[in-house]
Image (cartoon, rainbow, N blue to C red; front, side, top):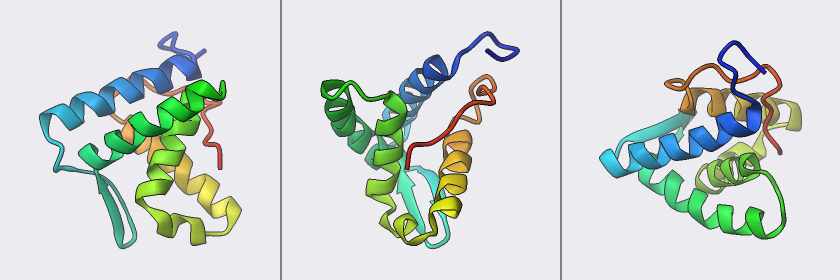
Length: 111
């Protein structure tokens, strides 16, 4: 738990809803940019919905769907060394949720 009383799973679910809201309002806006790659809110959420079906069927976390959606839309990230990729994914997830109450310190991305 953090100061906001939001656990990691709840924060990720809130992030998923937040991204969908942003995609509804402005699907063409860039959600995140890393190096020469970027993804819009619309494309990110389209991928997120597809991956949510997969992770739900396999009893995986929503965070897995977020990570998969980012990687799907920014395939150049896979060229990073694993440690750098993990750090970058954590920063990307935090950036995407920057308007939400603080994420718990245990937030991590599955790579």
